[in-house]
Length: 640
Image 1: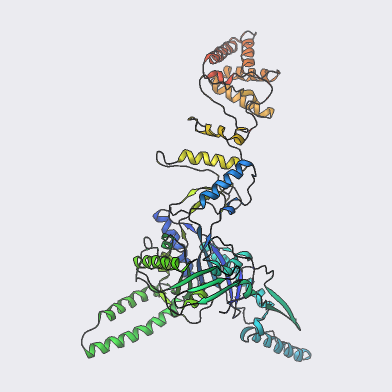
Image 2: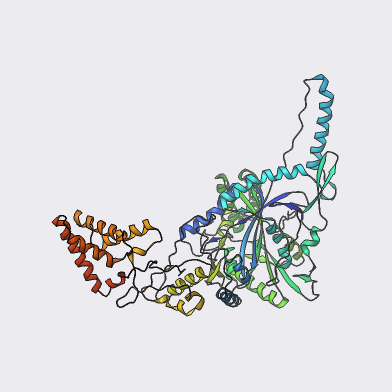
């Protein structure tokens, strides 16, 4: 089995024919939790890309194990409580769905443009040198374009031109599907993953090639030469044994481990599917065990497809004429073929390209018995979706090659022409997952996939959104439990929490010693011992002044008339001029103002304000704001 990749650079693979493939990660859309309109928009995303793209591309829908230890990368907390939480999450997730699906897109890039050096015949003295340079440049270009270099060598200028062409493709993929370029570690994972896909919990080894090629200088030319060690590093210690209907991969690290894989080929599909309701690729996640999918696509332009259709229609008319002349009866299959041809011709005339798809499904397991059980489940799912798949004997190695990135299929025995809308309606870019890519564990989906939440991600540069969260649900659905979990996670990550808790549900945190040390409880209820000083609500003098004035204006109806507003302002100013700043001091100043020699209306308003505050001191709720000033803030500097 020959390795299809010679080397790679940035996010570009080069195959054995020196053809370049650009690799991108397509974000999975939350399809399961979307409205009908949103689902149609998700389907139209892929349909629009297929309508606009021309040439070959490769979709890889792959699965990767979810390792609970990876949830905590970059965690700020290393306290005893954080470690206790970490161990509890690992134990909880151990029995849940251990894999997650990702979608990758590889686009075949056009070859570097055929360039001919300039020929200068204007100056007779430079004609010979110009002809010599023209011949040398022309020979180099012909060698780059049409002659195979020894050992897969390639001119470095071809690599530069390819990376320049990739930038335009990256913009198109990002605009249509939100795709992002892969990193070198992702490219390595794509190459090594097929050999390790059936080993649960096994991490894919890193190739460790930087760069993945050698540089050779030949005269004036700089050549790139692939490393011979690349195929060995990709396969690692694995040995592939092809059997009639399966592949057995022997992992020689300990001499005993082996994994099993088998491949199904899609050979027939229903004629029509609706945009919503028959998501034949999205439904792979209905299975309890992962199944991966490889889709090789060749987009044919409408005018080219129309020419082929015209030839097929002429052949169909000849067959119809022979049947009519011979028996007088026309088979129904030929009548249906004519109707389908006219329907397809109508679509092609309106600009629809024709997609030739080669779809390969990979089923894998650590043992032969599990492999056969998973294969049976997959075949039953395809039957319910009206998909015809075959497990072709003798073609298992070809199925394995189909799932490798950058494989250019020479022979396409299982190629199916289809409407781009049919492939888009399969929703390979849809997901049942929820939450963030990384973060803290907060629960699981109905399928058992862990749900992670990064409390800081909305406000990051990646999303740049508000951090607001709404929690809705039925009575007893777990809303309060989730709220308290978010408080707990924020505290573990070093955040600060302010909670308005009328039901006293957050009292449970007093039972966690590490959190209780940084917890302040203010009970704003009748008979509570909690007391707050409105004059000590902020660290800065200006802010405290503003808070106290606004609070007293609200409490004493300061907008009632100008005299009352002036009295409140004067009482606040006098209070701040004294060492003791609290409402008791305000009452003293109001009493003084009521007995001053000022205007009678001012004295009357001072008496009214004093009387109202005096009444609040006797109220079971009013006593909360009559704390004596001790020179420190009313709110202790705690994180909760």
